[in-house]
Image (tube, rainbow, N blue to C red; front, side, top):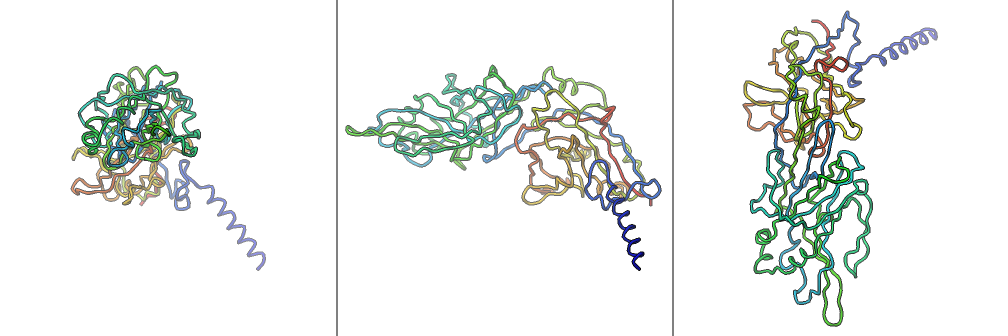
Length: 471
């Protein structure tokens, strides 16, 4: 009996070790459920993909609570990206925001503070930020980024500027708010001193005109524009700022107040007021003369490289001819494999999260991948299972259920769209008016780019690998 248990233990150990060695080379997800490929009971096949690369002429609305991009990013592979911010600042409360006019003795300083929320690109960038007053009478839409929007007009004379070393944006700063206040230490904050004449102008308004309401104030002061000088020392990054954090993003006017016996320093603040203030984040791309532009213009129908730039960016079409002739079988795993290829200075530029959906040319829409992709009411989706997050220089997408539907139920075969959206709206059926909630794919607008192998790449070919059993 003792020898029987020893023998049983050895058999179990061998089987366990053998099972632990069975895996697909691109994933460990569900490895215990995928049988080993032995070419007797379980088989492995790879389908070729025809890939093409295009510019994606999209427009993306971002809410007031999301991060706005500011900066100039010069990328030798993808070109130049410019982020410009326009936004309102309004009195924090109703009425005249200063003390009585006749007690104001002068303006000490005017400071614009911005809540720093992150970076894309080279953190060693040194960029000169210029602040202007918006001049145009046309109101921009609420928190709207548009690829094709023109820049808004500004008053030519700038209000202030600051040369910023991006490595210092998250450094703690000690701030003194007036003579009688304590020192405050704040982190992740950009502060730019503006011309004191702006403070005098704001103090000179009264409650019968400018401070009568928020709308009358906007008529007299249309907001601020933040731009970056193209001749800065090192333009290789976009910095992100959150306007809606009123504790950090604010325009502060420091001024002296008093009477004949005593003069004190105090301050008042103007903020990006919730539900009232509006803003715009304009993102422009210039790809002229880059490898990316050459690849887009190349008439070859099956590209060896695919350039994927996050919104506003590009996309690839993926056509898999072999899906139409694939006979019925049990699909254990169907996995789209996308491999990163080296590109110029890619150590500075993080790759984005990629997303995959279907091109329904019959209905002229793009729809979600059935059964493999799913989302919830909070705007999240099953990215860990569905795929799109780079790991060890490789993206994978799990298409097992949808490919099973093609071979078993003769579901329609579509081309795929591969891209890096900031956000996307799921669409499962063109016959249903409401299909799901918008989902966030990438953390920030215009952040992320990657070059991947296309369908004709000699060493890193994009492909669909299928593990299956015959019926």
